[in-house]
Amino acid sequence: MTILEGKNICKRYRRRDVSVDALIDVSFSLREGEVLGIVGESGSGKSTLLRQISGLETPDSGELLLAGKPLPAKRTKENYREIQMIFQDAVGSFHPRRKIADSIRETARNLVGPGIEPDWQTLCSLVQLTPELAERYPCDLSGGQCQRFAIARAMAVQPRILLCDEITSALDVSSQAQILKLLDSLHRQKNMSVIFVSHDVAVVRSICDRVMVMYRGRVVEEGTAEAVIGSPREEYTKKLISSVLEVRT
Ligand SMILES: Nc1ncnc2c1ncn2[C@@H]1O[C@H](COP(=O)(O)OP(=O)(O)OP(=O)(O)O)[C@@H](O)[C@H]1O
Ligand SMILES: [Mg+2]
Image (cartoon, rainbow, N blue to C red; front, side, top):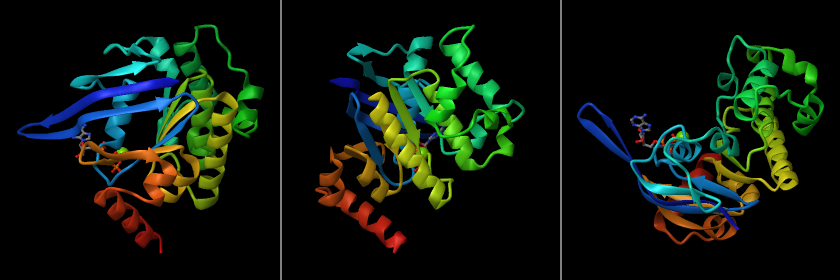
């Protein structure tokens, strides 16, 4: 079943006399329980697309459908609960002067209900951290621990879709591997659908079912991870993959 569908999404940013077409006629679909990867060079529109899906911004035109129903321009709390987003800067995604537990509690109370108290044991064991760590401030945790708590904050509201924007880019190699393993096991346990934006083609190949390639605001190629990364059809995808491999070697 298709859980999320985007139809002809356009987004233009205007700044004084300059305008940028960040998304041009972008259409996609995300199936239930699937991990969809998005790759593309810097500035190709990946984060812009996630911002339209999460409701942080509104597209200029086009339509987003969640389980077949159009998502309204003014999102409801339920819409926000169902689609959660995790960012590259895990530490910065928490209020600096609030304990992690208070930030997670606030999100749960805003989106689920005023009296809600997250089940800390379950939540922390889900992300493999001890509840005591949640009593710390973001600056007193490592980037990897903060990213786990960012995942915990999203999981506290039981989303249907998790949007991940370069969530491992700021982490060291071993934390990266741990976060990816965690994401993979969570999505399997919860049958959650995930959109995973990354520059790391090898990671995308290993954890994504399907991949979408973006170039200058458009989708230029889409297919199974194996097909798109293993034997790309489009010239741009070939160049993108070989340039990433060159950087790595
Ligand atoms: N708030 C904004 N105001 C003006 N232009 C913007 C804004 N946000 C993004 N853009 C422009 O839109 C285009 C797409 O940006 P976006 O951040 O979506 O790219 P990206 O694919 O996520 O890149 P990266 O890999 O570097 O994160 C770029 O040309 C960018 O400069
Ligand atoms: Mg981005």
